[in-house]
Image (cartoon, rainbow, N blue to C red; front, side, top):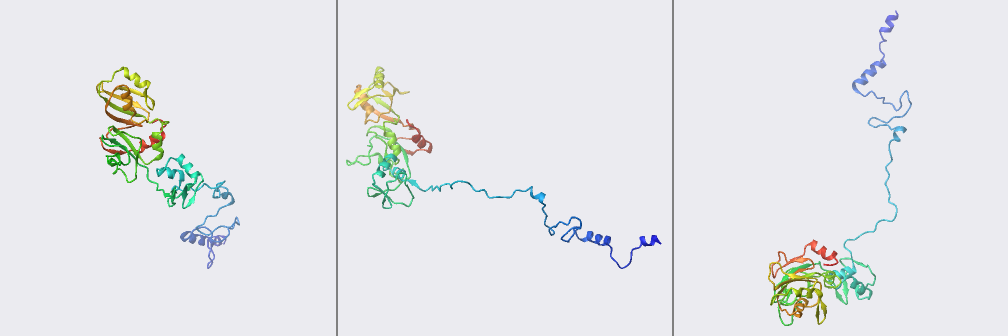
Length: 315
């Protein structure tokens, strides 16, 4: 009797084992009710993962970091200081531009500006002494000057000027830095950069110049010492920094290095010693050479050469 009760279930009633078997066949075994029978804790619906308080400790809340202090200033790359603008336009150097600004002769959009460090935008109209100033791109042109050209912007007598040799170099108007007389050949720099021009011509910076001179007669060895010690001229004493015979030349060819910016100083030094300069060629100027630059031709300086001229005190 006891055996029949255990082995045969009652007919017409579903049992839990049968429901569990059908659930395993078609659906997940997770409970679908909002609560579990044992723990009593709430769970989320299918597809979502519940996070316990213990799990929350593993995470760090994301927070937007706010920088302390004042915000950085807004830099406008198109703006430029007024003194630099005047210098770029070839009016004068930056230091001289500061003086002009302080005296009240410079206006921006019709307003007199006396404030140091004032910046202007590309659309501003700058006037100096009633004339509108146009800032130009800086140009640096190196010419190997031939004979027969004078170093001036124009000549009332109609003589050939060095400007005719560089007129096709750029649209900007450039100016010769220093001078070479009509019969002297060699390196001559042109630029519209007022700062560079003033630096190269100012005695303080001592721009180095090397000349190759050919004389009317052999140069005596004892006269080298006289060149180095100095020669008395009508405008004061002048001397060579170095002097020697030209390599591969004869005794009438002398190389002279000077820093003086006096007019025709090399010719006058040799004349004071009793020589006449037949040919005079400037082969080095402020570290620039005639390499790969034929006579009568010009070239633009490289960025490295321009940087060298700007950074070097003694060139």
